Length: 224
Image (tube, rainbow, N blue to C red; front, side):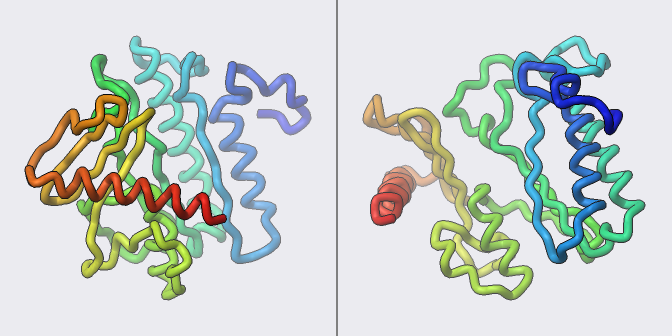
């Protein structure tokens, strides 16, 4: 990317500038950051349809676009490692959902919503793998908990690193939800008025827990 290129010239796809371009601009914003501490959020888009990327390593267009975004992320981290800010920075990587891959994966399917969360950066002390169930909403409590900051205002968020907290995952799709914990998994279809998939606990408690969680979300939204 050339700094004197116009915005129109950088819009190379349906989504605008590709991830390679935006990661470079993001790097510049971080390097020029004057106020500390700071938090920035970055959204990648090149792995979305129509998967039009300047990268040609796989025949499958989706896999090729993901590989491209991954290469851009790797290049960003490599560049960032060379800056003084790296040692005091935490990077949290998390997707909003997985893709319908391989073919046949449907919107409600658990595998569609089975995603990783990666914490990296110079501020991370050591390595650890946590296999507990969680959701994106748990980022707030987990992050604040690491800094010993009260997170009680985030009542729907839980601290994944706290071994005493009940761990579950909750996701939604059009007219339904999924609810999972170490005991059971359930997918509830509201249009059908029943669970369309269940595994583990057969008492219906997870279905009821999912309904209650969704109701509380609406109650909270309605009270604001």
